[in-house]
Length: 186
Length: 158
Image 1 (cartoon, rainbow over the protein chains, first blue to last red):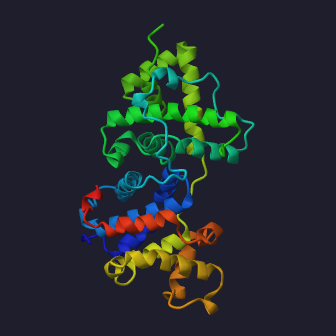
Image 2: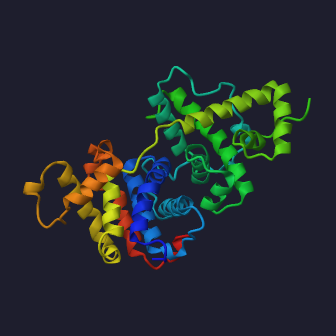
Image 3: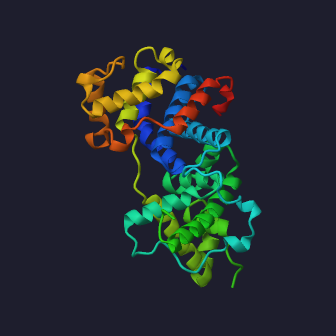
């Protein structure tokens, strides 16, 4: 391990960054078993490659980047589909803007319970192609800045900007479709 | 009326990611344009729905397992046997939660009391072993074993 990131330090980092990593993993995976596997693998990689960690930068961002790569590796290597779906809609670049334009009705409707709304949001998030899911989750759920997201996803800030907005448009569309079908289970 | 604000600019405006001059331009346009205001309100609702979703916390049994495997004792030696430690950890955690220590099947790694108490204090009792965590990791864990077997790709840590 790199000097300055010894075992005790790493124990503290698990405690400090674990919740954020797990929440992000859950939003990407959409289920607990996969989220657990992603987090476990991410911490393992972080531990084994800690010599490449730059202590002058936030550990959280470095860990989220590893976690994101774990997620992408899993998507590439396995075509299994639970809520992590490789049958997700085509990337926005392939879609016409007419399909992406917002509907009139704003959301979420107040009559839905908070729990139902949260389930719907998670289900809608799971329908996004992975680049958009990651960008939206990092921005709106984890609260990262565009610059931080660019580092985690290893893409330019301009691409982050585009993915966040297009991701939101797709998410709204997915949310409304799920809502019209009666809930997150559809 | 000015040209409508682009969707990307609206999102960046809501995220506080616009430079001061662009922010002032969008702000001024929204004051006069009902369509862009409605769109901004819709995006804001969506952002709020995401940010207010209940946050998941690292399950205590997973935190404990990570600490034990990565930090406690001979971390690297244990990591070298990664194919073993997923099922062993799951069995140990399930046995612990179900109070089956007295008749647990051997051999399962001993879990001393001190780290459990430390994890309990650190992560809170409510986070300890929800029922769904008692099931050994399924299909994907098996597939992760394949991942572990492929150590020839350290570049995957990017």
